[in-house]
Length: 145
Length: 150
Image (cartoon, rainbow over all chains, first blue to last red; front, side, top):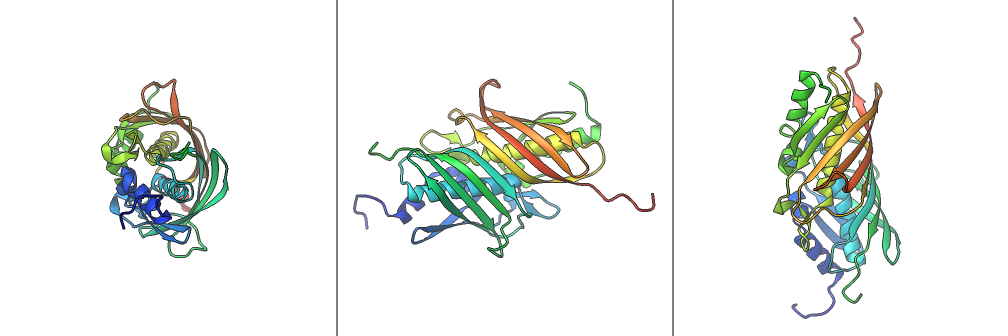
């Protein structure tokens, strides 16, 4: 369908993922079930930070969690502009292994200007997260403001 | 600027080329001195986080800060072989980088024990006095176990 008008959440998400070059650099994807989004980071050699284990780079893990938060916000708080990160705290629980990683974001509080978001990432077992993020994000106004 | 042992300098220089993610992002070695290290990343179109402004992605800054903190740990750890893993990383983003600007980061490992290193880092685009982000991190330090025979 090519009708104009408000985008569906799935379209919002797809727009976010397609428009941000760095999301494509990471190779990150996302799936939406209702309003619940799962971000997916397929393993790729350029994401490695420790070649001996091998393990994902700590910065890649942090970036994946941060982009997951921003992607979930793009669904919940549609805006023509990208929301901005204010601060993030990343906790590293185990090494990120050379396999696909998944993440889900929990919007703990979405205010008028600021959102508080928690994200958890896992690989084989959702009950064994390998990293978590807590962060604050500055919401860009929608086109009507 | 005080010097570090050659082995540490060589390791510091190789950190941007031997780590796949650092090479993929185009990180470059800037400097190393005892407990301190600096790296930079030039702007590139595929690293943009906001297509409207062409500003480099926060994730790239996250990776650069994390990697530069690792370099500072290496610069603080002496010549004994070891590896590090990030335990936690807190980043404050004061402002976006300038459009199409690269980023420089400098990190200071101000305390290292047998098992943990504490690091602070700063990132800027044009002017060192006008930071885009600061970081506070803790790293686990994995050193070889002492040889029981010695």
